[in-house]
Length: 291
Ligand code: G3P
Ligand code: CA
Image 1 (cartoon, rainbow, N blue to C red):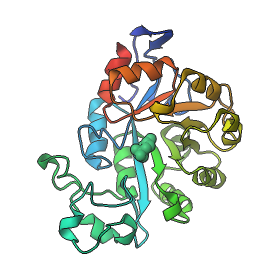
Image 2 (cartoon, rainbow, N blue to C red):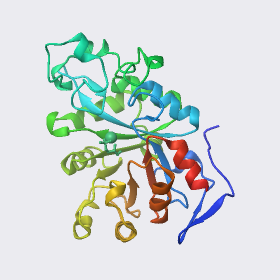
Image 3 (cartoon, protein in one colour):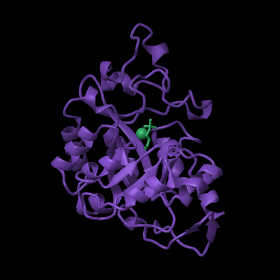
Image 4 (tube, rainbow, N blue to C red):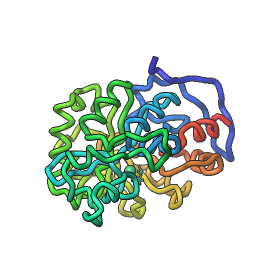
């Protein structure tokens, strides 16, 4: 059922031939593609509140295997899924805890965060959605047989978070051979954090978020498999320079770019030959790739 695939739809965009390749979904983490892998950014966050279980399910309903999320840590040491380092944009924390500005994630306990409504800001129909714990999130992604591009968000605020994430992944079965090989990528804007993940678990596929200078790419290839830049910084030459190198697992270094939410940008970055497109609106990207 999750062997998504297929098809004979090949379209020419500029000089690039974009096809939809028949691939078992499970081979996507490390296999090169004729068509970029589509990753639902913070879940299908154009249609459901970002980083909630509803956003994971929405991606699944639309037929997408890969979801991206952001992991941070509470005051009492729980791992939770939220993008901002503060709670006020995506929850009702200001109503529940008016005296706790600036409402940092790291200043609230897991029990306090569990009380917050993380859905209403997006629409009344999402009222009652919660900030998931990493444990809850991993269970839902597993239940849906999806795959996870996990971002360690602002790791400088959370010393030791990499080792803690490893412990949680192990407990939840996400360090099994199948998960590590096909269903998990860990990325961060912090090179130190990505390097730490690689040191702790050399078999995990990793990504660096950013656009290092071409001359510096070989040093990144020593600890990562993916260079994941903003689409606004991307060029065909840059993608070519990344692809010319082998990543830490001795496969060509990949490029997964963000955050691409419209057809024109999709076609531009696909024309550069990127390996993955991270998007709030995965259906829009899929349509654009199909021409
Ligand atoms: O996965 C790429 C993207 O998530 C990086 O930016 O700010 O949305 O976490 P941000
Ligand atoms: Ca992110």
